Length: 119
Image 1 (cartoon, helix red, strand yellow):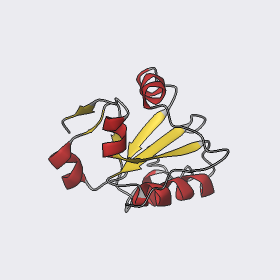
Image 2: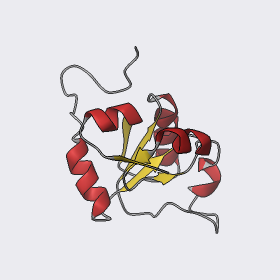
Image 3: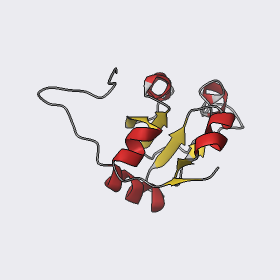
């Protein structure tokens, strides 16, 4: 299986518990970039906003009146396996957001101790 997490010297370990605390205290934004049907079928990370990758360019563009992603906060993104969230992280960085962390997939969130809730 492919890993979208950095490896080797200098790689940072993602602390899911810390991210969960930051999201709960509204000091970080957590975005699930899977489609709505996927989120309904398997649940979402607690505190996550579901914005499918296909809608992210519209919903995260700070120049648009319907922007749903607050600026000035760190962002973490995930999908099913890490591929779409890597694309989402790149897009968010290009739109001026930062820092942006790719958590990989919902499975990685759960394996790190993050709570999954119904959507």
